[in-house]
Amino acid sequence: MSLLTGALTMGCILALMALGVFLTFRIFGFADLATDSVLTLGAATAAVLLTRGVPPVPATLAATGAGMLAGCVTGALHTRLKINNLLSGILVMTGLYSVNLRIMGGSNVPLSQTATMIDMATAVARRLTGVETVRISVWEIPAGDLAVLVGAFLPACLIGLALRAFFRTDFGVALRASGDNAQSALAQGVSAPDMLLISLMLSGGLSALAGALMAQYQGFADVQMGVGTLVLGLASVIIGQALVRTRSLGIAIAGVVMGSVLFRLLVSIALRWGLNPNDLKLITALFVLATLVAPDVAARFGKRGARRA
Amino acid sequence: MLDIRGIVKTFHPGTENEVRALQGVDLRVEDGSFVVVIGTNGSGKSTLQNAVSGSAVVDEGTILLAGRDITRWPEHRRAALIGRVFQNPFSGTAPGMSVGENLALAERRGLRRTLRRNASLRSRDALAERVRRLGMGLEDRLDTEIGSLSGGQRQALTLLMATMRRPELLLLDEHTAALDPRAAEMVIRVTDDLVRGGKLTTLMVTHSMQQAVSLGDRLVMMHRGRVVADISGAEKQRLRPGDLLDRFDAIRRREQIDLSAAEMLRETYI
Image 1 (cartoon, rainbow over the protein chains, first blue to last red):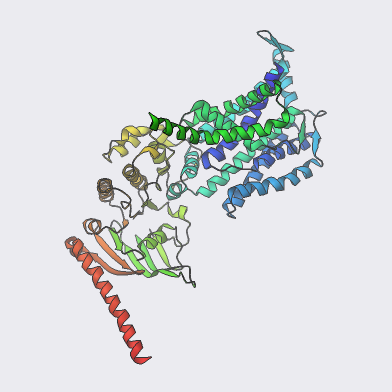
Image 2 (image 1 turned 60 degrees about the vertical axis):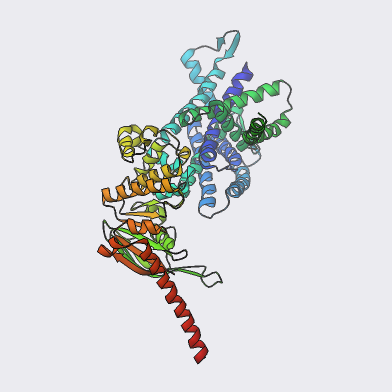
């Protein structure tokens, strides 16, 4: 059971990052490779601030700010210096690796001795309910774990709702149009490059926020923890798309959160069944590859079937 | 009013591929007048439009619109004053967004875009009413993705988007050239309605002789980066496609004379 709550909590935390990927990849078709390092940047910034005695909330917000700054750099490289989109991401990703090591002063920072947002959530749950464990059918779940799960679910929900509201504002409509057809946005007085830059900034902030929460949840920050994040985010967005199959953006956003949680759940089940953790990234990559080519293959087979009939 | 003064544009200057697209063009378009620009391929008529819209920056000269010098303004800033319809029906609308969302985008052209909820997305009746005036039955399809509409429908909606907030200048860049004849006719009807109905200052580029004579109240003919004829008033009303062809032929013949005369002079004196 703790495996399940663990997977759900992790899914909710990573959903924040997936929402960022949604913003850049779904809206602008921009796969921001820097996401991997930006997640680590968020974790590193939050961890170091926490060990220096900064309270958890400001530390997490500062990490988010660092991520936005990194997103800005990727955006500026691409929109101002006209560097190819993948290359801008790779440059920032590579550069940030050293920055992250510098911030942490080593390859990892343990958080076992520091108060984190996780401790805060647990404390709140204790004070509110006064119970140590909660019974759900036959399982006994520590109330703290449940509080942490709720604490991870809330930001994903709030940010999802905020994103949905954002897409209906004048600014949000302009941002979506920029990703859909830069030329038409331009003709309506919207600078599409500026909109892309803002998207990358928001997305960077979300990835770093996910990293900061993840470090607090795991109890450490590690320079390698971001590896494969973007592909994971893509997987979540793609699963989300498959889950909801709709044009409504609000539901699509909910789909991304669900996709992220579901993917995490599948991973933990696979690990339970004896999947070698070392194979995880390969399987994730293959999964994303399969979902990317599946529509194409299906269409080809569909045509062949139709011809035969 | 649009006031173009002595604009020059040369592509690839100093190379073998040098193209002198605009060689000092002056053009004044009075408020409320509908100017049709016609010319052969390479006459500079598209470059003229691009210079006004901002997708090409001129080398020399100034462009004034509504009393403001927009010569150095970036394209998206000029869009606050200019409504545009492109030759490619796919260029003017966002295909993945609905009809309503596209119009909601256009409603804020030239205005600040804040985090306030878009007004059109809230009250759809006003939007539906504007779309109804196109007379195409699209008012019932505000939630349809624009990408699933035909080229003609998209072009008509682009026209609506370009004029939704009254532009100081409407730029039409061969906006029916990529359509089939029936769709082109429909888009021309919509164009005429919108331009006349709103008394919009309009600059339209075309290479259809028929459109050039039947639309607008003034015709500007371009050739090799220069304005070679400017016809308005009663003469414009009388103009027939045949007259235009004759004028083009005349220009071409004069050019040949120029060339052969130059050749003769060279042989005689050099």
